[in-house]
Length: 87
Image 1 (tube, helix red, strand yellow):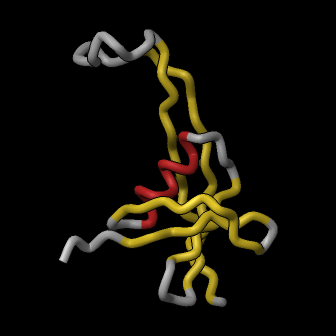
Image 2: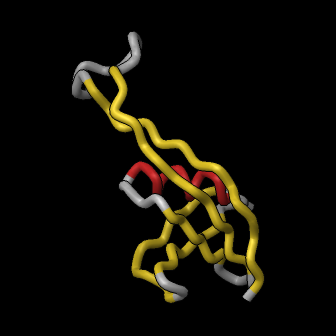
């Protein structure tokens, strides 16, 4: 089995149409933070858990080994888990 899980982004207690796929909730939260979300609540499909994160992103210089097609400045996402809520 692949171990992939589906996390649905929630806003104001309701599901949105955005779904992030990752093995861990933190990886899905990083994807949401990279898109600019700050108050991140991810409902894990098939369970009653909602993973809550604070997210932010910074504009940083591209790394030395970065590919040529990337711009000189890229968005670096960060998240901090604030807890798990049960539905």
